[in-house]
Every structure is written in structure tokens, then in C-alpha cells.
Length: 400
Image (spheres, rainbow, N blue to C red):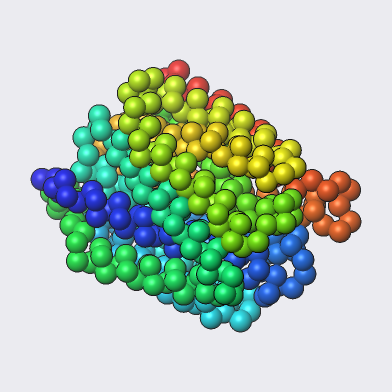
């Protein structure tokens, strides 16, 4: 028996609160990395890339395990554990006095980071196939709304010091934890659970299972390439804004809030109209082309207004994830939705292992004191090519 309709607002609020915590800390990351690592903005971006990679690497290893555990024991326990560890992580980052402690905190958080993948499995449990695109879009809107409030608040708190947003992010994570404990029902009945198997509870085992479904495998490859391009935003945006436009933490927060508003409008209102109108397949291709246009504009922007001009294209491109999630969940048995979301999360983590190091090193190469050419937009130019490359596996999947 499925959880009632009232369960969805609870999961949306939990996602929104967690995304607020992520958005809170982004405007102050350049200042924190400069404080702990020394050097200028180029060196701070390089350290920030390695920090993001350490988090993503642990998520890559652990996400399939957590996804399979949620198939075996339910979604709620895994979600609650994730929120608890994220709260502890923000406290550790707020008090860290060295890069070593900062890296240890992010590694711990990456090992238990299953909030969004578990939330998506929850939605697949309680939503019929024909309504999943809209439901995934509303979850994206919840994330976007949190990303409107979080960066704006983080920018304001950042004016008080680089540590202040981390305390606020910890409070939000623990608030989401309490909210989930009290209000969030379990979405996966015991009759639909399956035993946990270690063979399928790791990245290699999940890859083998997914490779046996060619249409699904090609979609997952498209998602991987898309994420490699898309993760340039959380990796580089704050550093790019400082190097290219000289923005303060408050201005970075305002820009991130503007991006979040676009995501709310697109995923909360437009995705439910676009997907039924042109179908998830065409929606996904349309989104990749828009993403490429946004990246190209950002690569060569020379003034802040140009970055804002690219935001509508980036926001419209956010229809890609709900469209692809719909195609993937509709091709996967209900008893394996947690495993699928674990695979999706692992691919996202793999992209987040590759992107921060790659993009931050590109940024460093073109912004360091001895750079051959000063070109802060170089990572966005690389993302432009990756977004076009993602069309190739997507079309291969659609041909099947």
C-alpha cells in the first residue's frame, strides 16, 4: 500500500531545508579556503576542488549501499541517518581550524550522503508513472526554493564572518532531521522490500546490473556526461564570480538566489507542462542545448549583467534531470527503485569526483599569476563541450 498524498509535502520540505544548508555555505567557501589554505583565489579554488572530490568519492562508494539498504529496510531510516550526519558535518566545518579537519568532515558526510537519492526513491514509491515527471520537477523546485533562500541568507551571514553560515546550515539539517522523524511516513511497504545483498550493494555490482539493460545504461551514461558539465556551477561559480567580476559574498549569494528562482519556476511550474507537451525524450535534448548556450555565454562574459543574462537558459535546462529520471524510473521495477537511485547517485558522485578537480585545475591554469592567458570562463567553455557530448548517449538510448 502506498503512502498517502500528504507524504509528498513532507519530503519536499525536507529537500528544501537540506538544499538551504548547501546554499548557505557556497558564498563563503572562497573566504574559508583562503583562510585555511593560504594563497589567493586561484589556490583557494584548487583546494576547493579537492575538497569537493573527497566528498564525492565517498558518496560514489557508499551510495549504492545506501540505495540497496533503503530497498531492504525502508527509505525513512536511510534519510534520517543522512540528515544526522550532514548536521554533524556542518558543525565540524564551522569549528575546523585546519584543512585536515575540513577534509575529514567532508569525507564523513560523503559516506552518508543519500538525502536526494532517497527522496527520489520515495517519490517513485508513492507516485504513478505518468505523474513522476511532475513530481520530480516539484522536488527540483523544492531544491531550487531552498537554493533561493540559502545563498541569499548565506551571503548576508557571510558578511559577519566565513563561519557563520555553517552554524546556520547545521541548524537547518537538524531541523530537517526532527521534521522527518515526526512527520515523514515510510513509503516502502515490507511486502515490496527485497533482501540486502552485498554483491548489488556496491558501485561495481550496480554497474553490472544496470549494464544488462542497454536502454537504461545509455541513459545513465548521458546523465554522467551531463553531470560532469553541470557540476561546474557548484565547483567554480563562487571563485569565478570573484575573479571575473570582483563580487563580494553578498553579491555571490544574490546571484545564486537568482539561479534558484529560475529553477523553482521551471521545475515547479513548467516541467509539468513541457514533458506532457513534447515528451521526456525531446525535453532532455532541448535541455542539453539550452545548457550549452548558457555555458558559452558564461565562458565569455565580461560583466556581471552577462552572467545574469545566461541564467534563464541555465534555469530552463533544469528540465533535463526530471525528464531523464522519468525515463529511468519507468524502465525499472518498483522493487529496485532504491537501487536505481543509488546508481544515479553514484554516477552523480563520479561526476563530482571528476568535475571539481578537472574544472578547478582549468580555472587555476587560466587565473594564476603566471597564467598564459587570463580566462576565468575556461571551465564553462569545457562544460559547453560536455553538454553537447551528452546528446550522443541520449540518442543511442532513444534509438532503443
